[in-house]
Length: 137
Image (cartoon, rainbow, N blue to C red; front, top):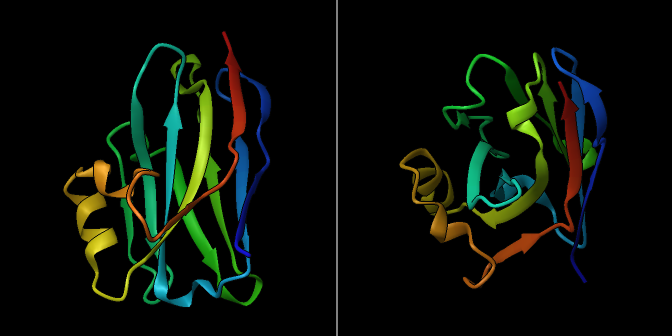
């Protein structure tokens, strides 16, 4: 059985930092892409960042560019999202999603902002339960 577990969320002041982690069990992530998405109160799903576990290619949503860094640790089947210079508008539940990327479709759709490909309704993806990030002003 596959499990995706996010950790590292919490409460931080504006300008602070958090490091989110996403660890998978039941699958080997080498052929997957890992995407971070967030859902803020009253808003829709937003793509934050994505990484190819096979070659390390990274992609960022507009809100994350220059502030967030995604990285991988294949040996630990884990992905990290380092978030710096946090703002109140970063407050959201952050979800980690693993999707098979053997055909490069996962990274291609993330890069082109076609996030619906990553939605839970589409088979082949694994979602975590989410971790809350709250940035106080």
